[in-house]
Length: 175
Image (cartoon, rainbow, N blue to C red; front, side):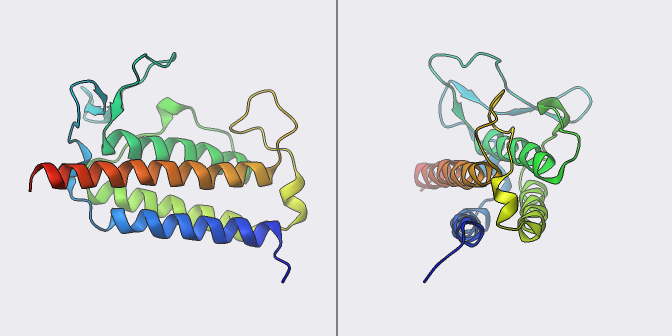
């Protein structure tokens, strides 16, 4: 059986999403802002009522432990940017991607990003996969759209595992 790259990348995305959905279905609003350590990154209410993610332009040492809120914002940020690139739209800046808030607003946002992403994936042809992808690499014309799709799948799997682990730790801590 021969499977095209596009079919394989879509299958891998669907598998990754199904593993993520397992945790999304079980999250409650309190999970998002639970701080698992004294030194962590989270999202904080700004004076305008919106949410602001903790951020440093240079990665701190040690690396802060992220909250589910921060991780869910991070997914939304990189996925929005990847989607902008794939869709040929102007690319939003990190500070332009807001977090909707704890619980269902963020779960719905992430599910909406999935639907948008699937629409873009379904329009791709195998030939499209050979095009150059500038994201997430900077000043690099050697990575293709297929590389970017593989990166999205890997990044989503990593972030889903982090969210799942935090959810399980919080549940175990309160048991």
